[in-house]
Each structure stands twice: as structure tokens, then as C-alpha cells.
Amino acid sequence: MDWIENPAIKWALPVPMLAGMAPLVWLFFRRTWRELDEEAFLYRRALHERGEVDYRPVVALVLGALVLTFQEYYGRFGFFEDHLKVWLRDHLSNHPAALDRLELYDELLGRTWWGFTRIGGYLLPLAVWRLFFRKDSLLDMGLRTRGFREHAWIYALFVTVMVPVLVLVARQPDFGAYYPICETPGRSWLDFALWELVYMGQFLGLEIFFRGWWIRATRIFGVGAIFSMVVPYCMIHYGKPYLEAAAAIIAGTLLGSLSMKTRSIWAGFLVHGTVAFFMDVLALDRKKGLPTLLSPHSGRRLMFPYWHVLVWGVWALALAVLLATAWNRRARLRAVLVRRLSG
Image 1 (cartoon, rainbow, N blue to C red):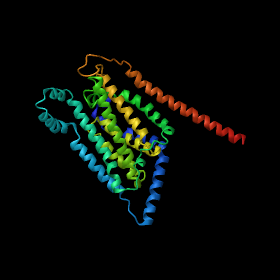
Image 2: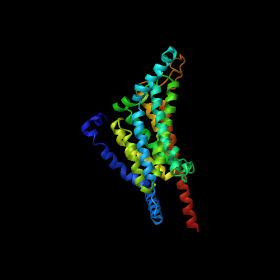
Image 3: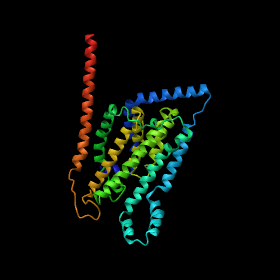
Image 4: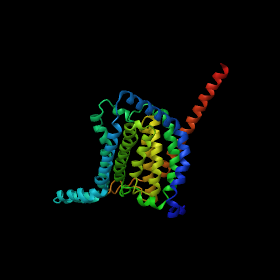
């Protein structure tokens, strides 16, 4: 698939990609989008009749802009290297052992700073939201788990589609050059576990921020609330491989629509977390860098030769859930038809 790397082709590839996905996304979520617009219309009409203005979108968009700007300038790995690491070195100058550990875990600490600034920034709006709108329940920002089991098949559908795509994308040069974001998780199981904990934490914060709080705070926009979220969500992918940044338009639309369909961010978080974890695994596997040592200083090794079994096992489980759901729905539909015919 070297032809994908041809700039004359690559720059335009998102256009047919979006055009091909758009009808499928519309077919799958058109009812959800219509319901969002109907709810927004009734909400706006009620506000108009009462002579009120909903300031939620104003507060949300300003807060969102502040959070993303803070993260861009103070949450990057470079800020840690240029400022925090220098400060730590100065304060640990009389402790050689601590300085050695700082150098050993330099990359992981920098990426942890990146992860914590993401998590803190993404959760900040929830912390201050009640100061502006006391009657709003934070659980209504997509945090409720009710109905998750009913919609588990949608998570399975996304995983079934995405795993083969990831396996193909992982072979592209720019994918291997960028992932994993942290360079040390293949060094030891300790590095791997700590990094994935931080990485998954920021994905949870991201889903709460974009697919939970942002869409619900701007629900007066109707279906436009989803697409107002997609723009900044796509932009936070700048710097990543080009096709991934373009694909974020599709991913943001899908995950945002899924969040509104299920009224919960949890299915979207599982999709995002699963895909991100497998991206790290596949990138490390391509570099022959999956962890074996228990810790950087440990001589003990723990081999896990079943990574591909894990990836395709999750895919097979997701496919099984889809087939079981289809079978159960077919059985229920047949039972309904039998009752109608016999009645």
C-alpha cells in the first residue's frame, strides 16, 4: 500500500473517505439526529415563550476554548522538558540517586504530565459547571450507565470494523513513526502499565469532555451540537499522522452520535480505549519492542507471546456479540410475527 504515501494522492484521500462513510453514518444515526433537532426546537420554543436566553453554549464554548488553549501551551511534553524538568533537576541536585531516576523515567514523567493536564483540563468544566447552572445534574453529562447493556452491540460493531482497519494502518510508515506516543512502554511491564493507565485515563477525560459535557451543554444547537464538537476534536489531532487527523472527523461524528443515541459516554470510551490500546500494541509489535522485563532494572522476564491472539480474540468476541444480537432480534421478530398471525 505504498501508493497511499504519494502526496498527490494522500492529501485528497479524506474526501472519498468522508463521502463513502457519510451515507452509512446518516442511515445509522438519522433517527438520533432527528430526535436531537426536535428536542432542540421544543427547548428553544419554550425559552422564547418565557423570554429567556440559554447561556450554556456561551459558557461552554468559552470554557472549551480556554481548556484547549491551556493544554496546547502548558500541557505538552516540551513544556515539561523546558520548565518542570529543569526545576526538578535544581531541587534534586544534592540527591544523585533521585537524579538518576529522573533521567531513567524522563520520558514517562513527561508523558504523565501531558496525560494529567489532559485529564485535569477535560474535567475542569464539570468542576465549575454548577457554579453557573446549579440545577443541572452532572450525571446528565453522559455519565449515566443505564441502558449500556442494551447498546453493547454497538460497541461490538465498532470493534469488529476497527480491528482489521488498525492491522492495515499499523503497516504505514507514519503510524510506526508516531506510535506509541511514549517511547518507553516497551522497556518493561512497569513502564507499559503506568503509561497505559495514564493513556486510558486521558481518553476517559476526553470522552467526558467532548462527547459528554460539550454536546449536552450545547444541545440547543440540535444535531449541530455534535458537529460543533467535531471541529476542535479534529484539531487536537494535528501533529498526528495526516490520515488519522482526517479520520478524526469521522470518529468524532460517530462517537458523538453514539453518545447521544445511548445517552452515555461509556460505550464511546470503550471503543476509543480499545482502539488506542491496540494501536500501541501493534506499533510496539512492528518495532519488535513489546515488554518482557518486569521493570527497567529487573533481570526477571515475563514473556507474553499471545498479543495477536489477544487482538483477534477481542475481534472474534465482538463479532460473536454482534451475531448473538442479530440472532436474538431475529427470534424476537419471528415471535412477534407468529403472535400477530395467530391472533
